[in-house]
Image (tube, rainbow, N blue to C red; front, top):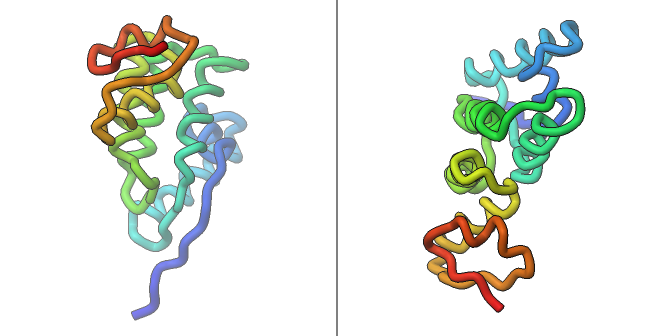
Length: 139
């Protein structure tokens, strides 16, 4: 039995799929994701791509809410044969990002700290981190 082919995927590939624009590229992306769902290929996604998906969907021409962007990123994380290191941590950060209305990178750092058993964060940007109950913000 031959191993299934693997490929990396960039942000714009997912943006085409998630937004349906332009339609021809969205259709191509959907076909590739269907191949992954069937187990014909495995797509390897760097965690940074998930962060960029959220950022682009919230800014630029898409202007989605944090909740909408988080839901779309979580949908990508839960696709079959999509491999993303730390996918559960990324998903938890997307939820926290939307629930607390904080930057995604701050939410990721908070979730990372929690997973690592860290109670403190050193930052000069206390606005977002002060909303996270399990972190003590220093200095």
